[in-house]
Every structure is written in C-alpha cells, then in structure tokens.
Length: 222
Image (tube, rainbow, N blue to C red; front, top):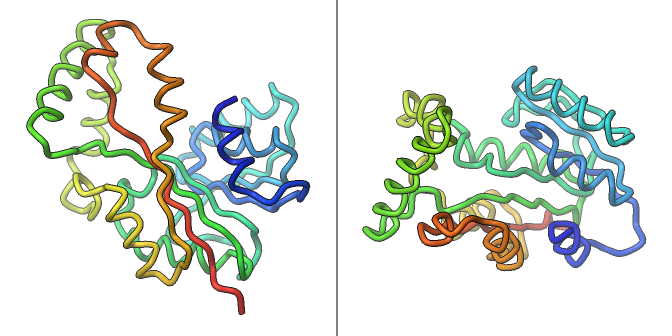
C-alpha cells in the first residue's frame, strides 16, 4: 500500500513504536500503523467515529486502544509516545498551537509528529473555479456530497478556526517550528496523489484534486 511505503521510509526500521493517532476518525492511520506491527492508540472527540474505528479494528483483527478525548487536551502523561499522527485535523482545530504543544508534550524526546492535511482553500482563481465545479458535480452524482457535509459541519464555525482557509504546507510547518519542533519537513505526497488519480473517473481527473501534504517534526532530545 502506498501509505505504508511512505511511513516505512520515514520511520526507523525494525522497531515497534508506541503511536498516538489524534482525531483518529474511523481509524485510517491507526489501522495502518497497527497493521505495520506498531503499538497504537487512537483518540477522537466523536463517540460515533470511535465506534466505527473499533468496528474496523475488530473486522481486521487488530488490537488498538481507543479513547474518547480532545486533541487539545490529551489524557496521557508526558513522554508517552514515539510518534503522534493525525490526518486532516489541523485546520479543524480552534486552538491549533495549543494542540501542537500537547502533541509535543506526550512525545518522548526525539519523538516525531506526522500531520497530513491539504490545500483545501487554495485561493488561486483556477482552484476556486475547479472547487465550485467539483461541488456541483458531487451534488449531481450523490445527494449527500462530501462538499455539502463539509460546509454543514464547519461553515457555521469557520470564524473560530484559525487555519480554516489558511491551511498550507508553509503555515503548518511554521506552526510546528514555533511550537518548538525541530527538523521540520514537508512531503508533497506525490505517490499518494498519483495513486488516487489513477483510480479516478475522467471528470474527476479533469477537475483535479486538492494537493495533500505531510508535515513532520521532531521533539528535541533532552
């Protein structure tokens, strides 16, 4: 799997890591890292999503500890994990800098953070036009489109989300650096985008997708 290859190339080989997946949702990353043989914990604010994650883990025969909790106030002791991960979470947070400090707190010295996100709100005119066309296409194809669900949940609270419409590799990397992470880097995830494009319909390829990226950082060694 393309995601597994990306993470295998970014982590020390042959070591079983203790990993926390923040905002685990249905457990995509938690399941992936558990399949890779790591000791995984997932946490999410939504009880409904946690039930889906538990169901998915059971179906796959994977042992993962799932907790109900807040990404900005983690119920774990300092230095508990080797790696903290999250996917499409940063832009949804009301206090992203506070959350990132929490992720650093629960990491062991030398531990890593991996945050996956996307340029959902690229301001360039060409991207705005494609987003609009994509939304109309989704509405035509299916009643409850991703775009309509997205706007329903986050539109009313957009003013309280600092990274809403401002998420970018540059802003995310700066956030990590300002919070004290070192060795920050950006992976444009070209392999993932190529994999997704090969599985898309012709209209989806024409309209294009938002680019996703992986921001990583390391907690300083004490």
